[in-house]
Image (tube, rainbow, N blue to C red):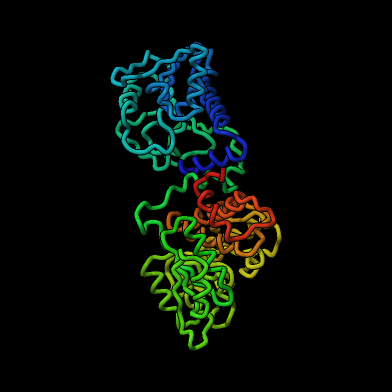
Length: 481
């Protein structure tokens, strides 16, 4: 089964794969027409009641394939109020051939001419809540008619995901739905699931549809989350890249906790980062130690920060002990990257983790030691299930899995082998965790990071810092033109 939100993702991803929505509408309309023909006899009368969106567009297409039936098309509203270009084009096609089309300007006067079958194409998936006018009055008229009713995708007024039905929802005798069964109609006695030509890749590959349905961040300060990068020591650029990328991906604030000894270089990278040193520079400490962990855990949990643990940490024995301790004591949400990754299998934690290993780090975690990650998705899925965390394995094609679901992402360029792009990925995922569950945040983060590189079109001359310029564009689903 597929939820309405996921279906919207798949539709858009199919378009990105070269199967535009107008082609899918043509296939859907054909499927509706075939079901109408199965339910009626030649010369029977059919009333197609069409909304102003793509659900109505499916029925407008169907009308062109029902020339052996007596067809009347009812459009709920003025033609200029049709909300999508492809639905409008199909209405205009019916106008050109002078089919039996009517516009319903006043729903209170709506009446059916005693048809043999009514096709309910008013509202599709993704529409919830009480029916409004004109749909509410028309739904009552459909329910009062003596004819059988065929609903397109879901009956109008029925929640495609929960099955909750509003008081005036259409009582459909039959349903024709597309691509996969919707949870809200799983118990309906007569549902036809029509294959409309959406390839499996539209579900498996992360694409612009995943970004499209993600939704915007909060509109008030603080609602888009804070990232808290715990890193630095032997390397100073990595935590700065992660923090900066999280800001580019929509986080309200980005903090970097680092040793006192590297405070100045990290603070000097960007005025946008809030750099907070730990330790006492006078004692010569230049790395994370267990003594600093309780304060780090307290800050992260008190402010409900999404933590990025690992960029630039190094592998000093005290640092590894501190990272283990942090994971054991922290109960929030974190992206674990770089030097902290190998420690995860050793620690029992209540934290929600997204792990972002490259190919060698994946092997350290216990995953397959291979170049082609996409050919070993089952092994990576099993690893994620064993660890109990979401894994975003980085390679030419990323593999993302939570131990049950598996997606692949092929966005990106060969130039992303340059150092630092994994740090930007960790920052992007951390920002998205403020508005998405871990698997979705990892999927969208992978796509956005790769798409940001594509928009730069730098070839082999890519620099990780440049990704911060195009991450916002990639996250908006646009391009750089």
